[in-house]
Image (cartoon, rainbow, N blue to C red; front, side):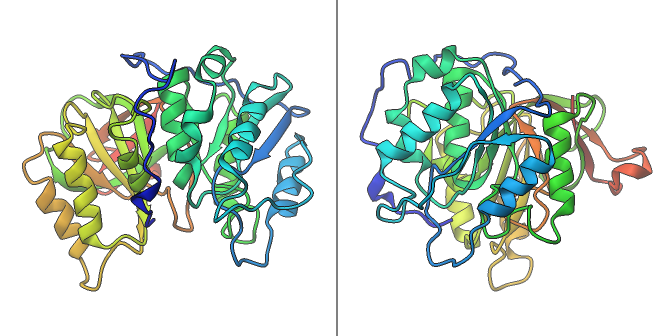
Length: 343
């Protein structure tokens, strides 16, 4: 995701925006039940030149789960390349999150724009509100970091329902099933096989910590802002799309030089679609070189991000990494890899 720096946040401070520490465990929102009312909001880009709206299919999907969907806007808002002005988008998200009758908020589209909303949100009211599921990925990583920081809640990293490759379209049944299980099933605990890339070996006791992160570009954009979550002690998840290997290198180097990799338990990469560069294997070489001296394991292969498989998981929840040796066949993990299990 290529973003311009000309929209850098000019608010160095914001009343009530930051806490000096992150709780040991972020709050888990309650599960959904049939009959619950939910809302879709557009915190980032408008549809652009795409002639196809996924909104009707998304509404049908949610209604098929027994949910009551608030009517989406009758007409698409547009301001520059956003789905409305900053004030309109901030008000839409805040109204949905603070409405006690709305049990979940689906962030319908990514693109770019969520970062601009953060100074406009009422952090004190959001922190005091009961937690609820907030679902999305990509650009909304900025909102997730904000919610981790100011409200100490988990979010759901999963598909945006009005994106061109939304799970409501044909061929995304696996994404649909994972999202539904995470929203409704008390006993559902995702587990993913991973591949070793670099860093320290994973052996002996499991590595445990909250899984934080999201889109690499947006995670980097939070560095130095009041809404940057503390990542020490975490398993950092990162994904991105259409970034050249040198740009991935530059962003990871910035995280390291800003001290954001200190104290990590592990790094887990999700989908890096379009980031491979012109030379086969170049990105993997870059990652192995960057983390050759890392004391924590660096793993890849989590099926989440901008690829066809974008399986939902609870961002901010506790998880553990175990070596794949001796893992059950059902995990699909290869010897030398690992398994990430949410607890």
